Image 1 (tube, rainbow, N blue to C red):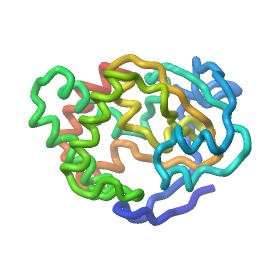
Image 2 (image 1 turned 120 degrees about the vertical axis):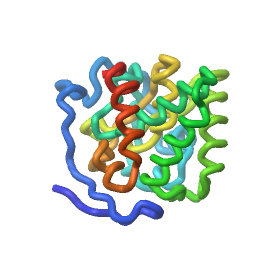
Image 3 (image 1 turned 180 degrees about the vertical axis):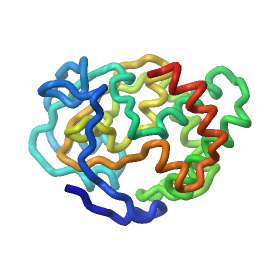
Amino acid sequence: MSNEIEIKGMGKIKFEKLIDENKNSKGMPIRNSKYLKTINYKQLYKLIDNSYIFSLLPKRNKIRIFETMPINLVSQYRYDVFIKYYYVQAYMTKSNFDFTKKVYLDHIKSFNNFMEPDGRKNNPNDFVKSFNNLIDSVKKGGIDKTIIPVTKNGEIIDGAHRLSIALYLNLKIHFAIFDLLDANYGKDFFINRGFNQDYAKIIDKEIIKRLL
């Protein structure tokens, strides 16, 4: 089963059922996760903080919230998380930041051409400013006031920026599971859309080999 959806800034994206053998476990899409609580649909809106993503999620009365370490949400199908982690590392250490910002913006351009469907970011400066503010906010106040929506197969639907920050700071992530198909945002997706291959080699060597 698969289908294609037209997404603003991204064009047609194929959604299908993906399986990550390193992540899935019997009965749960994410290994080493713990049930926290059950919330209602109205409470979910406040935790998602993205009207576009919220509109995609199937409506139901009860949503179970789980907790896990961020490394358990990392996937071969979300190469962008590794790139964002590279940025967080440079921002936090103030090391090689100008170059790392180029890498980050290059992958955003290949991903959605600096245009998010909810309209809150539509140019390179918006993305940099928003990411910097998010890093500062999470560093100061934690990340447990939002959740990461996840598919039944364990792929994140939204929240790659938050996940990369939590990964760097080693903060537990809250997530909820929804019955949606997965999008394969793996390495080839970005390369095929123009992401610099030399940048990809750096990510492969400095980030992926260290985390996985």
